[in-house]
Length: 219
Image (cartoon, rainbow, N blue to C red; front, side):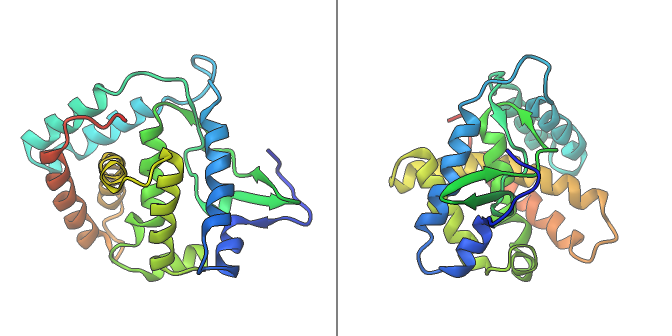
């Protein structure tokens, strides 16, 4: 981990340089993520993402059906407590590569918990936040929404170590429950943003669909 870098480029830049083949960028990205998730934090050393996610669920409870609010809280409560180190804002802007070595930057979001909470944040970064306005991806990353979506799918397969589409889709949907809960809370708290009404509707719609079909967000 470093705070200042010389002669380094971000994984974002690697993607922009070679959008047709995302393999190298994804290997750097997921290699670092697995290293992060191999570390156990000390008890009480970092914020517990399970507790944070429960706060999100409580906040959005009055905006979704009583049945879905209860299901959402039950799913999060059932996630086992883990001290696994999580980055908390793991996107391609935060991984730099220098001389073939990936380096992690932007450490103020470090936390701990089950990896599903990390994947939920990753889904939002690559897909969720830009579903309604694909230009958001270009503004943030400098590459297209279509590329971000492909990268998310490739990265998830690498992280899980499988090409099985059904397994990847199942885990993606678990992460999406966390992602849409977080986005719904954010949109409700920012009612003056032009996108907020449509985003609130989208999050509520997707949570209803996903909560009906999901019995556990663990993997």
